[in-house]
Image (tube, rainbow over all chains, first blue to last red; front, top):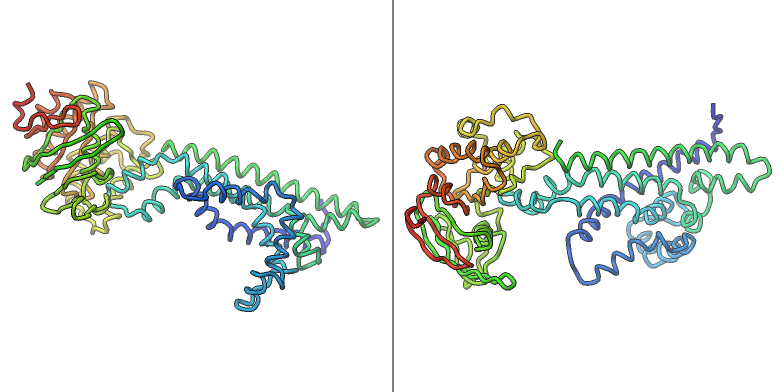
Length: 231
Length: 220
């Protein structure tokens, strides 16, 4: 039905790869941060909280530019990573994944944090009286009970990452096959005289992916309630 | 068996309790707000005393002067809460097995069977905690605590959340436990009748102080 061209497939597959990698890499950090924000009181907590949410409120082009300044070849972090680990982000698909991960992070962390906050801490105490060291309590009680929220966060983060545009194009530009995601492909196509049909196809793909993600996130949220009530 | 000599300030409330007991079931008796739960939480290590010592089975688990505070998970105690606190994401069987797994103990089918039979919970194994009645939940919680092979079992008003009928359903199990399980217990309650049936020694608490200590006859 949708007659998707090879070039469009390239953009779709690249978007999927970028979003999957961004989500998978961001998830452990997201869980750690969600736990920290839900459970610990420390100096600078509100600053950290604000910092996590910053990509949500900053103009994406600003976030992208800041990434370029820090992770570009001449940036402080970028030059270090390139010289010592051979990791290059600028104008590479890995850079797109980094930009998407940063932009998706606040959406990813929020459901995780809420689900950790919703856990009855007395269950963790009970686990401790049964001989579970704190890290075992985390992996056998906290994380399993928070799992639906963790998955919901991953789905939302993925949906955000797959549609990210502003920060990505600013940081890694719009190179077909390397950094041209669905969003930047659509942007290019609607500036091309005959691009409407192709743009339309990619728009439909984006809408399907976004709605699918929302349905999945909703489903995980419902699972969370069931899980907490032990049915 | 158990030696407690602690002080703790909790807001306006001050708790200062001292007793030592070799009894099989120490009944901790007092009105609500007398400090019973705080005392039990200190024995469990969930609450840290401001000053004092706690010795369980010859091991000093708290000694503020010497800077000793053994964390809860290394105290080898069992704790049955008023609200069973079963893990909702695990089946009954997994709940029962939790303590053994966390302590890295080898499976002990004989003991497992004995406790399951004693508490009559064999038929519940595959159910989820959410599908159990209050009384069933409490029996599973008892089994879960016992199967971690504790050297001391703490029970904080384990019948408190049950109605009269359910209480009568659980009490015989507790009596059997006392006579057959061979684990010393601290049993917290504000119910004289319950303690008369179960306790071998009574510690009476009133506004954070021990007012009497002795046999069950102090419950007059």
